[in-house]
Image 1 (tube, rainbow, N blue to C red):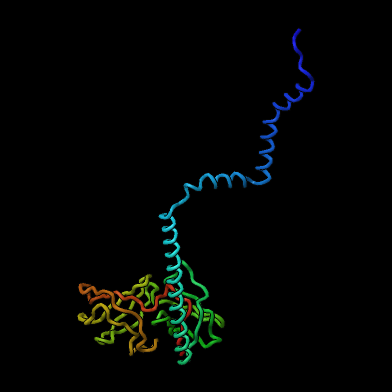
Image 2 (cartoon, rainbow, N blue to C red):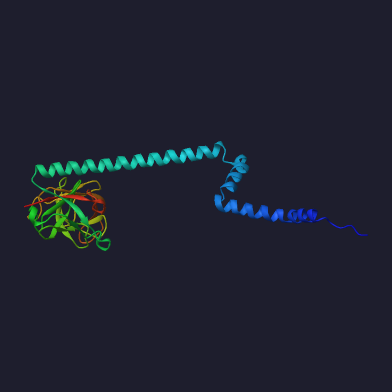
Length: 248
């Protein structure tokens, strides 16, 4: 007669077969509820022997030090810029000039013009000279009661009369749409060399005389009919956010 299974043993055997599935479901529920925290901890423990050693730690420290030095350099540069603006403001106030903030610039006309946050109500008029930290940057082109538009020296075709104080030679400074301008001389032998200062002409009736403008970078002595020089402006118009307007 064949042996028969007792009902109790049959029941335990069925439960034994379901146990792995129950454990799997329970594990999935735990992962779901803990959002995988257990696996993350297990991975951290197993991968600890392979974490970066002293060499990698030194690289991280070197990168951190470089970041700190970069931040310090940026703060120093910003401090120098603010000091220059403060000095410009103090000098302008002593001379009765008007300090004005640059409120807008067009990317398409970056080298042509900028907009100031003061206008005729503050005494600014058309053709007034506009100075940045270091020298002349342009002239007032148009004015409203609350704003003023500046035509930069770098605007293509914008020309003003200048001279070289060292050699006392005169020329015409012409904008080229960049930070460097062309200086066209009248004399065939202007006695010019790199490093010479360029200033507004003492004979000018449109601009204040002897205002610093730029420095000679190079000279083309073969140009016809007279030599032509490249001038770098002292006041960088691409980075200006405050100016002084010399009202007349």
